[in-house]
Image (cartoon, rainbow, N blue to C red; front, side, top):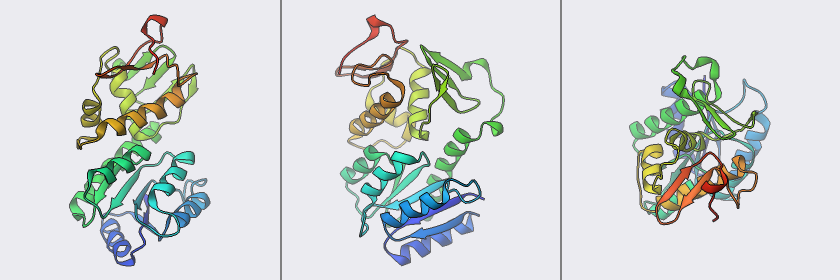
Length: 248
């Protein structure tokens, strides 16, 4: 049974989320602020039977808000995080996504939409972390760009033979680029392909995820070999040859 951690300072909202999620067969635990979230994750994530597979995280909470909490989560964990926000402004959504959230739901939320987004994130995360459940696929599922290898049937990425731990969003961006080596993708195009829900400000969101990928895949993220910017156009991936290199 998949476990979901629900964090919101309003008990009524936590209770409603628990009802919706338990009706779908999920096990739910609650937290009322960011500090509680980090404490619960620290105590649970080392054991498979108690580990959480997803966090629903409110942005506006006392003690420690959702954004600061998310910063801390991303330092240690790759599980998907869906933000809960009471604001409809795009800036609020973009801020959360640029910090490392995988998706967002605006309050008051539609239970059907909420469950659909939860299922989508869990599906991506479980495929990424459970190679044994993945079906055998054609050779094209093994992609190689220089020292980077992506095994889509195993949902695994390696750099010079060493496994690289990516979030589901980082994995999807990398796969999109590696399936189209040398092709320049505009930030909005990457956003549409990965999130399937374009919003203004997507450029900043994509830029942060590209930066995170560089930190994990480049020897010197400030002088990248693989993940390149084409000024005024977007991003591409190259084999790491000197003539392909660019400087940010």
